[in-house]
Length: 128
Image (cartoon, rainbow, N blue to C red; front, side):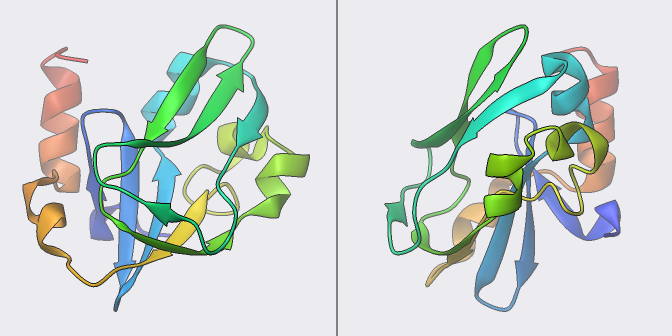
């Protein structure tokens, strides 16, 4: 997956937009900060996630972090592979380590998210 086509939020999560389906995941920076991921909790298919609200958690040997939705919509797929093999978030956060896919009606909230270049600048400024 090419990280240039992704959008990022300040919680170090990304989204990939494919039509009206948005894939959620955590960034490489997030997985490095967390350390070894040992547990992931995700919503079931059919559940509605709401922009700005927690939709799950990622637990590492260091901490438990909330996952915060960047857009609202209905969960149409959950990556059961990361539930069984949470270290996929460490080894492949942009590929097999995706979290959920959400069907959305309104993509407007994504306009306030960062591009790959903006996210790199955000990281280099140390405001995380």
